[in-house]
Image (cartoon, rainbow, N blue to C red; front, side, top):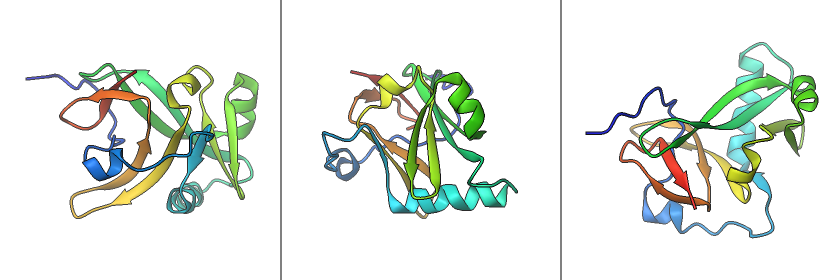
Amino acid sequence: MSDCGNVKKVFVPTDDNASSKKIDPNLTFGATSVAIEKVHHFIEKDGKSIDTHGLRVKVVKDGCSGNSYDISLATIAEAKENGDKLFQFGKVTIIVEKLSYMFVIGSELDYVETLLMSGFQINNPNVKKQCSCGSSFSIK
């Protein structure tokens, strides 16, 4: 039995359809229209402005496969100060923590709703393997 530690539930695709989804090889970091809409929704729901806040993606050492995603709201000004990568999708900003960027190059942020769960999902072509809980992964 594995110990997934303090993994936050950001799901790594586990079915064949998600892993075979074509991702643009020229993409540095993308987001689906559904993900962008949800980021906008969560920023406003949290009482923040899309002009000053964005969704921050960070890869952390955690879980039984070695890495997991930490996703939170963060200020754009602080991200700029830290040297994080900023991606603009309309009025929504996605922030990728500077040291995590090399792990997510070519990835696409999505938001998925199923009968069992809903949440952000990162379709990352760099994932080599993932644990059975679906929340942690290792990179090629």
